[in-house]
Image (cartoon, rainbow, N blue to C red):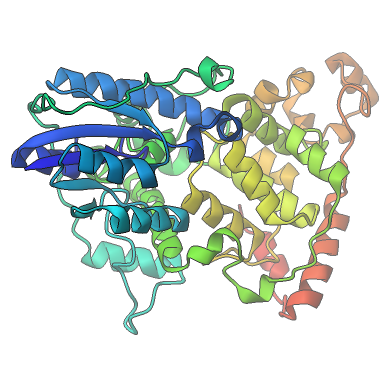
Length: 483
């Protein structure tokens, strides 16, 4: 049996890689990666620089790991829909195996590859803990509420143990040849290395997991929303690119997080990821349309000045601007900051959530179609299990609650670094002498707020109520809940 193991960018590991394990047990193995222009053409790569950087470092790690097991990763250029069928025929492969993706464009790609192949094309699960679409309500329908999905998962799902890496891989067959190319460099793709982006690779991913479990995991429930602390796992890019599998993370967290509240909170975040992927599987149109039909044709505004201020981190709201600059500078945004940023764009500025979603996908290292979309739709109030549209984050109180000493703001908005904590989230309230002592000149060294929180909140509620024709009774009670 000769098997092509098609690595595709979400499975850049050799441990817990069922296609690779099964292929090695069956006979000859041809590890293959295709540099598809969909991602690797220079113009395309420039639209996702941080993801490309993480992917390239992970791909180099995979190349070394495959070689250490006795084989070699073959890297070729071309459209996968053409390359895979051609090489399968040229190499006289008996089958092609790979991990399934949930995105609609990926499913279309796989349908085309399957139709063009003359040998079986087997897709394995592994991007999620359960195959997407597995969990159903009593009526046999997809879940539309996360809490019910999570309850069903917890009650019925069995997560298998992760597979170890193969002890060895067979050497490449002597007759397997191709027009191979080296793994690209950032420079060869016309990109500049960002030193703030995480290093990819399977070994580094496992080191991150171990570090989280040893240092932060047992305080996760308390610290995960604190933007000034290292209270999260930072494994989102590893899960996105598959340098770790979700069940590796799930099983180790279950085994090693001893604080029950933190364990539940962290596993719940993995279930949210599961929910997002399952929902996109069932509703592929969500990448372009809101989950809730009543949000179609919502009267978003076209305000280019406000849009650029939000993107560049010059809104005059320090916590908002810190989030914007962290995205641009590090290719990452703390999850609490993501929610604040999304709420501000869609509700304070009335700008279409899809613009923010696309902006985040451009710069996020962990940019994942299912999760990014689910998060943005949740924040805008139009998604599956979304927060109520009338719940609008106050950027000042969010900053004071989750960055109480202003350390997150000081790092990413250094022009405010000398302001005392009392005023760092609302510099416009600082007395003139305090501003002078901190070297802050409002309107010059740091902008004044581009909108008033109370006025913009009421504007959104008025527009939303009129468009959605929905009652808003009780929104003040909800608004005053800690968020």
